[in-house]
Length: 267
Image (tube, rainbow, N blue to C red; front, side, top):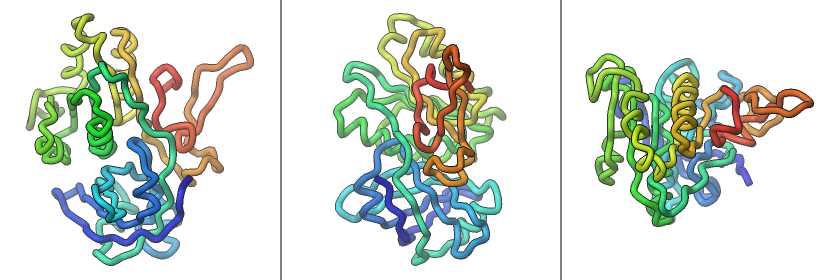
């Protein structure tokens, strides 16, 4: 059940020029949140911008503080306003929303595949996997430049093995994240033990889903979409899905998703 509440901004950290980490306090949202879910966040008081922005839940902080975190990148007017919000501000927040990740079988090795700001969804999953006593994940992370590889400290602190790629070669291997994934899926015996969890731009999701299907590896996709309402009313975030003899089907990313099994959607 989602809650619509003014969440107090208790910490606002600049990670680099474009990436920021918000810590918000809302016990009701923090208690109900699950890995892979999101909130609709007002970026400043008033009606400009009119619509809230969908933001993945980065972490729910341990203890009884009722605090959760949002990692975001400044990419437009709404996030520029958000970057200027001071500690003590109260931001209208609706959540948690959507369906999150399904935990893998106990014997499966989770592989987290991230492109750019898609990394924001994975710290919560890492901590959820640990609490559920699942196998330790591997992070496969690609971005345009080294400055776009955000939140690496979280994964280093938890000793998550990382394989990095950048398009300009400024960190890790030069190229796309799929270049890192190829050797993991190449050996059938090893690939049979994996399950992929993927978040990033749609072309990356398409490529990784195709690779997973060819290798016979289970794959969950966390879709990114513009969401005017976040509750399934406006139908502004529908995605095409395999249909039947009556024609194609469509599902709402905000309610049926944002996480789908790769075979459930047509990107």
